[in-house]
Length: 69
Image 1 (cartoon, one colour):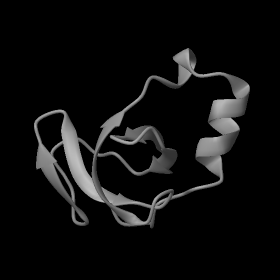
Image 2 (image 1 turned 90 degrees about the vertical axis):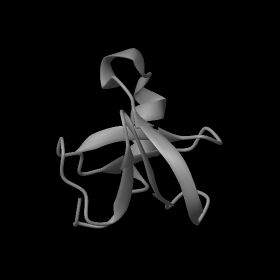
Image 3 (image 1 turned 120 degrees about the vertical axis):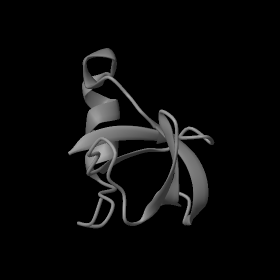
Image 4 (image 1 turned 180 degrees about the vertical axis):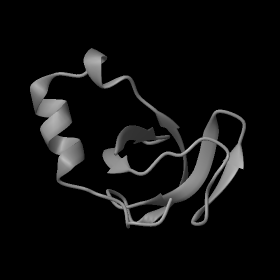
């Protein structure tokens, strides 16, 4: 699982497989995907988990996206 951030700042976990996406539209290094934090479609980008605090990682773990990449 990868931690991603939506354009409104929400953090959540999703499966991030390079060059593969069934529930998102790939736009270079970003994707247009439904954000489970805000419940709407938004641009998301992958975040380096090492740069996040323990609290931010815990917040992302509360919002897993579905099982399909």
